[in-house]
Structure formats: C-alpha cells, structure tokens
Amino acid sequence: MSTALIAGEVLYDIFENGNKIMGGAPFNVAWHLQGFGLNPLFISAVGQDDNGSEIQEAMQAWGMTTQGIQIVPDYPTGTVQIHFKNGTHDFDILENVAYDFIQTPSLDDGIENCKILYHGSLALRSPVTRETITHLRQDTNLPVFIDVNLRAPFWNAQQIKEIIFGANWVKVNDEELLLLAENKGRDLVSCAQAFREAHQIDVLIITRGEQGAFMASDNDVASVKSAPVSNMIDTVGAGDGFSAMTIAGLLQGWEYQEILESASLFASKICGIRGAINKDRSFYDDFMDEIH
Image (cartoon, rainbow, N blue to C red; front, side):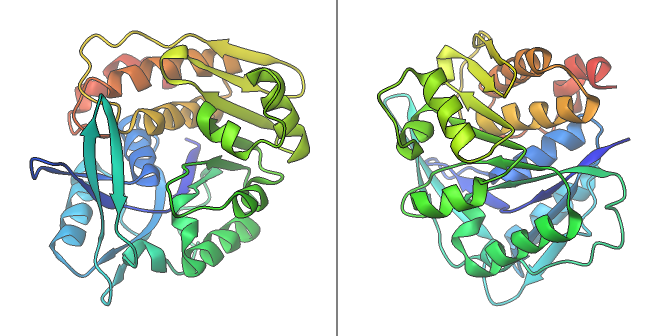
C-alpha cells in the first residue's frame, strides 16, 4: 500500500502538571498514519537519553519502523513546554536538540512504497536539518506536502516563502496566511488564491479552527465546516491530525471535498484527548474502512 515519507522533529510535549506526551508535528502525523495502517517511514533524530529510548520503544510497540531514527549523542531529545491560558496553548521550544542535527539518510530500504514526502517548517530552523530535508526533496523527487507551523522566534517570512515555493500541497492556518501574504486587504479565499499563485503551489490548504477549512487549487475551492467536538480537552495536535488524514486521503486518491470532511472529523476527535496522539488502536476504527 502507498505510504508517506515523513521528515522532521520528534520531541516530548511537557505540560504544566509535569505530564509528558510524545509529539512534534511530523511525529504526530507519522503516528496517525501508522494508526491508519499506512506504515510511514519517519526520518528524525533523538538524543542518547531516556526520552530518546522511550520514543523508539513507543514507535516499535505501535508497529512503526525505527530505521529512520538517528541517535545524536551530543544533544538531548527535543522538548516543548506547553502552557494553557484562556483556552489556548503557548509553546516554549528548546533549541539545539537532536532533531536540529538530522543527517541525510540512506534511502535504500523502505522508500519504494512512499508516494508523498511530508515535512514541516519548525525543523528547518537548523541549517543541518534544513540541508537534509532539501536533499530528501531533491533525491526522492516525491510530491511534497509542507505543513507550515510558525513558531516564534524560529521563522522568517522570506525563508518560509522559499521553502514552500513550487510545493504540491501547503497547509497553513488562517492567521499564518495573513502573516505571510503580501495582499492582506482581500477576503481570505482571494488572499489564499493570490498567495498560491504567487508561490506556484498546486493546492493551498487553509485551516480556520472553529470556522472549518478550505482547499484552494487552480480549478476549485473546496470547503468544510468544522466538525463538532463532543468532549473538548485541548487543541494540541488537532492540526497534525488534520494533516495526517489529508495525506491518507491523497494517498487513496480521494476528492478534495471528501478529504476535507474526513480531516475535519479526525481533527475534532483529537480535540477530545490530552495531547496530540493516542495509543488506543480503537481510536482509529471509525476511519479504517474508508482508508482501506
């Protein structure tokens, strides 16, 4: 079955009460794709520490391959401190951690089934990892899905625009689009289309939280209202769940409207758990028939 090559950060989200949950947008996407039975190949790096060992053990227990996980002895596994305020969350992201030093891997094994390359923007803060992901894009020649996550102070507009130029799919939220767009005076759809055309992006995916999401392409604009959340816990990882389901739909050749509806539904389900991932396989049952 076709799957995805996922590259970027893996880390621990550490909450105010001391609880910690594995995270990082690329890791979360890879975890969900595994939950859907799509066996992604995940490229990242961890430290030679307990957190790094725990991440590898959890991946193996979940059925994920760890062949793309590199051990970086001189740097710790990444961590992010998460703080909640007024129903939203803020991040304190540690620098100079293992995922900042991902080396270009050998792709002899496991890549033959990969049909999409996914990466985010946060891991590109590091010159080493940025060069590695650039090599992956060039060497694999796979269609590229880029998930923009603007985390201050680890981004600048010019670099983001260079990264996304010519990508097949780019996902941003509405606030990120307005930060990056040159013409902010238009309605959001017109702004998205102008931005997409200026940067030669095939499909621009805009998430809008409670207001839903839409996909802008040459031929159409597909949109969806947000799915209801029956038991809101937090929004951590909802966007990553949206990305994972979008990739699953792209791999299956779904129409954009179907992708948006399923992605919105899965993102709403993520809002009903603490953190970004779930180790209960039944969590994915409602989507398995559709994906397979």
